[in-house]
Image (tube, rainbow over all chains, first blue to last red; front, top):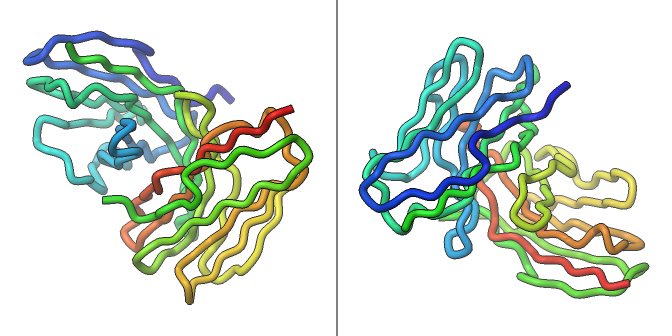
Length: 115
Length: 110
């Protein structure tokens, strides 16, 4: 099976712009989660989508949004970019078993730099 | 805020030695997972231990869980240079949210 793919891998934007990142989960996985990783804050949970619905949300401002399509592919959008949004954005998909255990399979990440 | 806190923050050992890192968490959990991340890349799942389990093995990895102390440890035996990476613990709360600790940077020198 192909792993989780994320596009683009690298992105440079300027303050005030908006950006859309894309994630394709492993085939058959319906849960997609997004994380932000920075040296200062570490790995922070952004949100999780399951069957096109946002199921969980972290503590990020409304500038961060996402969606999931019927084929489980997901996008996240950040509007009005700030310097502090520079980070590695990781997407992970999971196949929940009947007991709800959720091993996450991560993509390689999108490195976003905001100038 | 992060649920898990790893200790130590960094660890440097020689090949063949064992590496032990600890993770403490704050709230009740359904399970605890350990992940590895090589230099700025995606995370790789290593092992999951359920809240009703005390110890689990996978190859050279041994994980323990003490829910009374809200802590877990990851032991890598007979370390190799390829084990150089950051290691994260992650807890799943009752809502299914996965929260990561700050990580332990492990450097294994030949």
